[in-house]
Length: 287
Image (cartoon, rainbow, N blue to C red; front, side, top):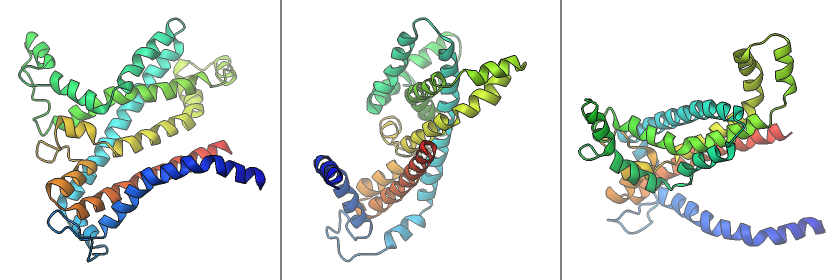
């Protein structure tokens, strides 16, 4: 008991600071979600109960944002995992200059999403951007990457994958480096070729690490806001209007802080569910 109390004594300042910095905004957002507070009605009362949630659930734009968020998360995480696995397997075969390759791969991950958005906004500019200039130099007409309802979504997906794939590569490369060699050597002795060893031996052993990488990235992608704000502001139309940006628009452009908080609270519950899955899975793997 004395050891436990001592541990809590050392942990209390940090826990209290986290509770203050993170707990207060969450609790206040929860209060706003059930209140009548807007920019035109600057009072919490009367409390509306679940009426704000009923309002947003009845809004087709909310379900469009939910659909866009799910599609965006699945597309980005799927692309990051596929490319990350390919590059991690290639790096696992490299002997020389591996540290240099890893250092280069960490550059996009080290950049802030706002910086990435600004850089790519200049590169993708339809008239003066270098990407369209290069396309036109080989006879391909330029493309309005961020102004087309058909292309904007996939353009942002590509930019997100470019930045976040480094994280997946690092996790999968670490997982591959930690795998035991005996099962692979035994499979080779039994006559399995390289593809069979990878499919039936490497992938099953890598699954715990892969699942952790996927869940972490799903949590990150559901919270995406920076790239959307910098590159498209949810447009054109509502083709890139994810939940986080929809909450911002409803709260600060639609002047309904209560409904915006309700949308943010729904997003919080989704992220908490994914986080719970992550901790349950990692605790089972630990046992």
